[in-house]
Length: 258
Image (cartoon, rainbow, N blue to C red; front, side):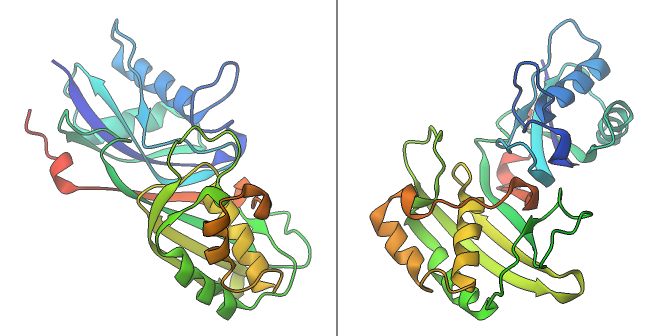
């Protein structure tokens, strides 16, 4: 019998080739699996399952993973043990025992993403790995109007990058917001949805910035839903500005009834 652990972590994605294990690449999943197996000291290899992939350079404030161990280790023991083994660009925030029905990816109810834009003429060298950059004047009120068209259930075919293996491009966005942070010269977007397609948030942000600078009509998202054409929305905001903020689960999937 094994015990399932749900672990929430943060990481700086700058030096990772994304979350998913890849041959001869430093990945978040690969580094985590090495640490978990060091702590486990068992004969069977322990696999780590994530809530989803993040690309190279994308960060996480609240990524979620799960794994199964034979040993019953206190939650804080998992946190302390993994943090002692992991590099400084990953931090384990919380750990908890969960039901065997819990799955980091398949029982997720929704995800929150944040995108930070450095809004300055020149690129700030101290933000280049942690924000996107946009040098043109922006009208935030136009972006706020456009965000009203983002909320709801839509076909996001115009906002998915090549390489996506997802058959359906229909997703539901529960909320979409933007705010200015003048003291930091930043524009911050936040999206909460049922799930997101490959590069969807970064493509949407690029289109919203074009709307804010009057390079697109304010309600252009409505047209893009209809045309279902990635060529109509070619720009992708840099990975450096994207953060997986939170993965949301339904409470009944977390209770340990085993």
